Image 1 (cartoon, helix red, strand yellow):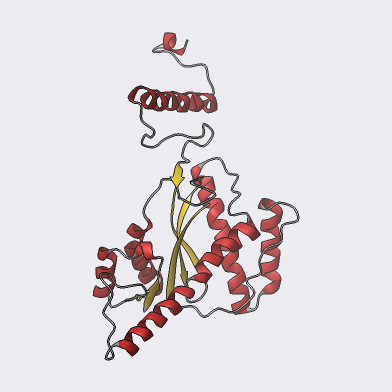
Image 2: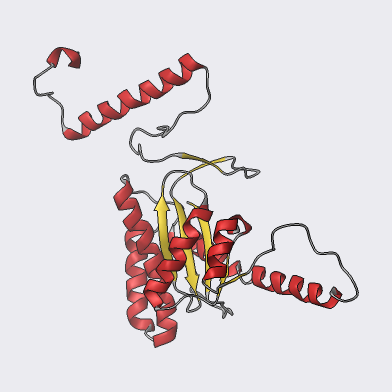
Length: 260
C-alpha cells in the first residue's frame, strides 16, 4: 500500500513511520536467515520498540543469552565508580582496558599503580601496554608455570598468594553491580531509547557515588534527600537501597564489565 505513494508524503506519524522502517529491516533479516538457512545475522533486531537492543551470548548456566546494555566500569581507590563504556552490542571487554587507563590518567593526572581486572583483560597487547607504562598487572603470567624447585619455592608461593589477594580485592567492583541492581534498579531500566537508557544508567552510578561522597564529606542530610528523590522517581515502591556500609581496602583502580 505504501509503495503506491512513491514521491508523496506518507500519511503516518513519525512514531508509526519509524516502526514501519524497523519492521522492514526485521523482515529483511528474518528472510535472509530463512533463505540462507543460517542461525544468526549482524545487528539482529529483537525488539521493535527498542531496535538498539542486541542479544549477548553469555554462556551462563541459567542465562545463555542476555539482552541489555553492556558496561565497562572502573572503581578507583576512592570508591568512585566511573562508567567508561556503555554499548548494546556484544564486545570483548579487553579492548577497553587501554582507553580506561588513559581516562584514569586524564581524571587524576597520573597512571594507576596497579590494575585489578578479570582474566579476560589479560591479552598480550594489554600486558605489554601496562608494562610500558610501569603499571602492575594483577594477573596470572602467560605461558607454562615455572617448575617448582627448592630455590624458587618460597618466591612462587608468595607470588601465588599475592595473585589471590589481588583477585579478592576485585570483589568490590562486582558488589557495585549488585548494589546498583538490588538497590537502585540497574537491571530494570525502563527507558525506550538508547540515549535515555544511557542517562538512566549513569544517574544510578551518580547516586551511588553521592553516597560515597556523603561518607567522606559528612553530608548525610543533603545526600539522603537526593537519594530519596531518585528512588521516588525511578525505583519501585518498597525497594531498599544499599547504603555502602562497610569499609574496603581498595587498590589504585579496578575494572569490570556487566550486562544489565
